[in-house]
Image 1 (cartoon, rainbow, N blue to C red):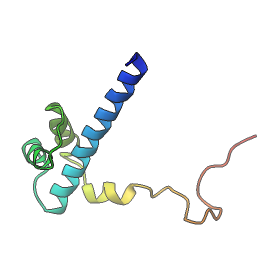
Image 2: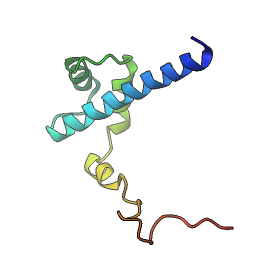
Image 3: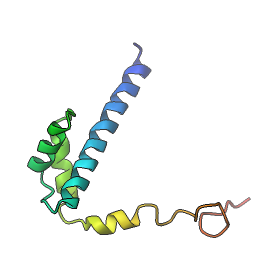
Length: 94
């Protein structure tokens, strides 16, 4: 495989690792458990997913002072309404 193939493979691995950590954090939050590296690692391993050992700790530190409920409510809050009917979005200047 060439360089581009190896880089795409690496990007896919990173995406799956960050996705596993994201899901682990959301599951812990939903269950009312602390979002700490140890708990995230247990969940990720139980799911049969392999991640680099630094990912759970990075996520745990990044989310330590975060209001997960608020973060979840903000996701997509700037999106235009379904159906594409005007309002919201951005207007391109020509």
